[in-house]
Amino acid sequence: MPKTGEKVTVYGTALNHTTSVTLPGDIIVDSNIENDTAGEWFSFIMPAGVTESGSIVSTGANGKATSPAYFNYKQGVILDFDGTGVHGYWQWTAEGSMINSQDLVTDPLNSGRGKCFLLVPERLLISGVPAGKPRATECWTAGNNEDWSLMYPFIPANTPVSEVAFQFDIYVPEVWEQTGHIQINLFNYFGLAGIGSSDDADSKQVAFYVPWIENGAKIAFHTNGWQTVTIPFSEFKKYATLIEEGNEPTFQMVVNDRNNATNKNFGMSFINTDFTYKGVQVTSSTFNTRVYIDNWRIVPCKMFDQSDYE
Image (cartoon, rainbow, N blue to C red; front, side, top):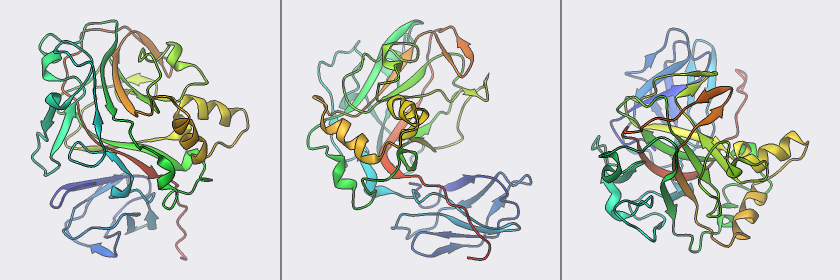
């Protein structure tokens, strides 16, 4: 969901010498395209007038490449902190975990995104989140009238969970490393205790995001601007377990699980405990990094095999 004038970087493989990019609505970009010599990315400047959503189609030395159809997917937004979706909060205190309207901030890059939120708001960053802290922060939708079956015209009920994702935007201007992770909750039922807790059981509808662990190693994670994060529902524990057992969960199961929940709030929480992730053991330490989050949305994420003959 980039804004006009922003640089958009698309990652993939075999993207060498990209010369043309077609955006939804048949808007063509064929100038000021930058390329990675290894073919792992290309970038372009977002033009004005892109109102539709869909795939990015690029043309380069190796032919055409097509992204999943989630570029500019505004119809899937469930919360943008600017009027789409309802931000829910309760039992707020200045020292508490709940993120409310007072904790929202203006996009620090002044890109036109409006409001977003700090994963750990300034009121808690002053002292830092101590080591061993579960449920350090939490941000939720209001849970009212949030029936995702209304998305079926765009994402059919029988779509495999591997082809539907939760997506959000993240901006990390400072290095995030060594401690802390995000837990994403399909509804409000879990303890918000993170990886290795009871929330991490195979039957639970949660997923985890640890961007500073990559390929089994710790890295210094940061972004140069807003970056899109895409987490297929096949990575949520319950559905990942069903797939491992040979089942084929669908988007309808995700919707039913939400509709059957007592508290239908969708949420994200920050946790600063010890944990093990993808073989990496983490001993928590004080967290005091600014991490900005915006634009929660549900998107189609089916991958396309592009034929040069199409």
